[in-house]
Amino acid sequence: MKKLNNRTRTLLLTALLFVLLTAIYACGLLLSEDAVTGSFLNAKQPPSLSHPFGTDALGRDLFLRTLKGLSVSITVGLSASVISAVIAVLVGMVAAAGSKRADALVSWCIDLVMGVPHTILILLISFALGRGLKGLLIGIAATHWCSLARLIRGEVLQLRSQQYVAVSRRLGKSGGWILTNHLLPHLAPQFFTGLVLMFPHAILHEASISFLGFGLPPEQSAIGIILSESMRYLSTGMWWTAVLPGLTLVLIVLLVDKLGECLALLLDPYSAQK
Image 1 (cartoon, rainbow, N blue to C red):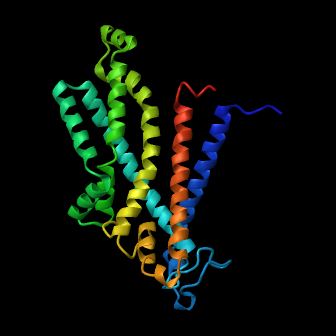
Image 2: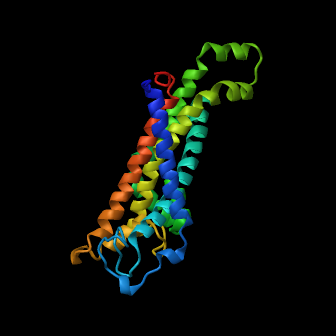
Image 3: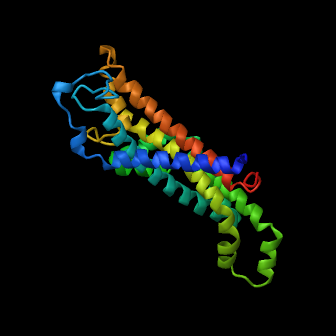
């Protein structure tokens, strides 16, 4: 039997992780609100075959609520990551392809945003915008673009010094043509890899801000809300209300992070052919 090379194994692992995450997201998305309604007859039950994660103080199935919460976290995290990645590409290209003043201004903005802890900055933005989904989404999107923007800036500066770009300029090619045919194809791997690697950070920040009460509303099925509610009952021995949803969140974050690493290996020209 022919042994699989590193690229094939990485490709299979990437496909498996993507299918698994998509299945989890679809299950949570397809669950109706009636599926996570409570019944006081089932309240405070420990994990069992009928309720794998147990039930909370209102009798709601924690496994179904966790799936529902993960779909919300993935939606918020993915939306914020896409917005952040687009901002990073635009800002990085402006800094590298613009004037020295534009580069200095962008570098100053990056240092300013990175100088403030993300959690505090997201809290301030979310509170200023009235909390809720809108404030949380804008807060996460506005704070996660800096590292990728620096990477894009350095990549554009390197590409501008390449000989084929100089030849294209001498042949009379416009800046738009050079951007479309030379810059963007080289920036696509960094864009997608940065987007996926930002994803777990966005999910964790969504959960932490909702846990602190500045994110999604309390009636929303979200991991941060579930963990926040569980704090009231830990002293009564209801350990499953915090441990199992929390471990599930950590598992999803690790899976997404692994997916980002696999994608980076596949898109890296030095390791793609191994």
